[in-house]
Image (cartoon, rainbow, N blue to C red; front, side):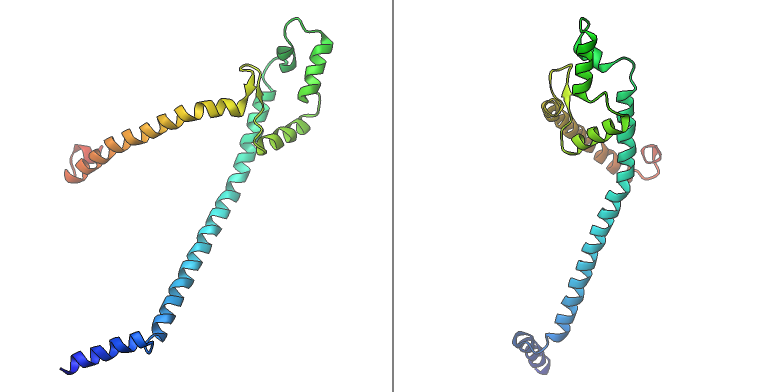
Length: 171
């Protein structure tokens, strides 16, 4: 009797919009929480990227110095064995090897940041093309490795959980 009528009145009130104020407040609070979580995630990502920058700079310096400090003259190697001193100087100038080390590093870093990874004199083609050629097989190996890992790890994890305290669980 009376309980059913009261419940019906409440339902009609919700449909008619009479009891929406608490609902609106609830949804506004939920939206605010989600917005704050979104900002927190963006803040975290921004701080993470900022923290990685010094590491990348140090790695770039180490790689550059390793490339520049290898024994021998890259200009002489590129020019060939029968090259004259003028030919070697011309190659050195074309490659920018006659400039100060800091200038060379900044030029190299600028090219790398623009996606220009240089030219391979060994393979006689752009380094980005070499990477692109090998990207497919690399991703294939990585994908199969992940599949194999899951196919092995999941059953072993389930077995270790099922036989709690067993040799597999302790290893």
